[in-house]
Image (cartoon, rainbow, N blue to C red):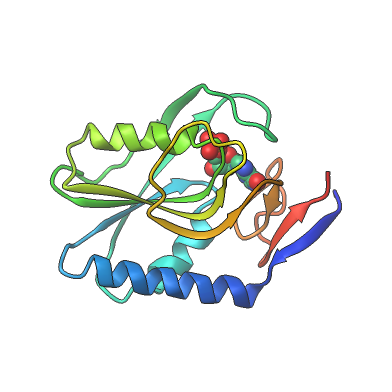
Length: 172
Ligand code: IMP
């Protein structure tokens, strides 16, 4: 196990997720939104966020496979699991664990727009800004960090650390 340092404790995460849920519920009241989680890392955040939203929600999932090493992101992406519910005319909220270069979410966002939704917005637990290559509108953000590799609360390093209840930064 690599050395790690606590970044966001449980209470802070819970509080921030509650705020995001309240904001989204107020923005989407009466709109019957479809929340699309980007697998796998998002599942912990997604489950908590959905329960923090007081209006009715519908959910679906999408998964993008990328090639390249884990500490960086390569530019090659494909959809390995697409949404299953109809998207046309719906208000879509894409929910991601972390946006780093922006390549993954930009790709998914374009894919989603091709399906002719009424609107698409992006909600990310973490916004990591230093290495951004694709400018993507970040409509709802849990936490913004400059750099570093974070794990826990769904985020992994080589498939480890996902089930930690808090968010840590790995020491280089
Ligand atoms: P992007 O395409 O560079 O924005 O990368 C997005 C994906 O890279 C995320 O969905 C994560 O799977 C992974 N990723 C990027 N930074 C981190 C990190 O700090 N911790 C864990 N996963 C990360």
